Amino acid sequence: QVQLVESGGGLVQTGGSLRLSCAASGSIRSINAMGWYRQAPGKQRELVAVIPSAGTTTTADSVKDRFTISRDNAKNTVYLQMNRLKPGGTAVYYCNDCVSTVWGRRSSYWGQGTQVTVSS
Image (cartoon, rainbow, N blue to C red):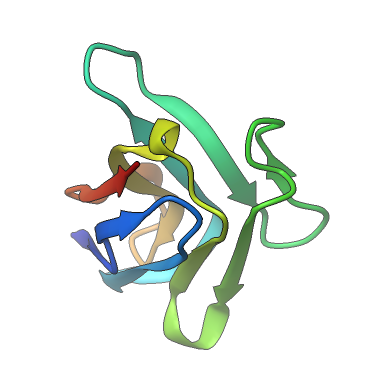
């Protein structure tokens, strides 16, 4: 089994910053792509940013100049630094990892979600 635990969400004023973390644990051999998604009330879940095990990251155009994704492979952790937050950033943020387990399987795992609320 693989578990993803997110932290770092909360309430912030417009223009403020937050840093989200997502730590993976369990029967992990390696983690391929790691990503962040968000779902605002009444809307579909959308991609925020993805960082592969090698290569360049992908970031949504709406946040490209304000959000930065990074990872620490030694800690099996992915981060999302969010700067200059806007009220439109209010959502539940989910991390998603593509994990190869010690049992030889590759699966996609989701965190439980962390609430980010941006007040105007």
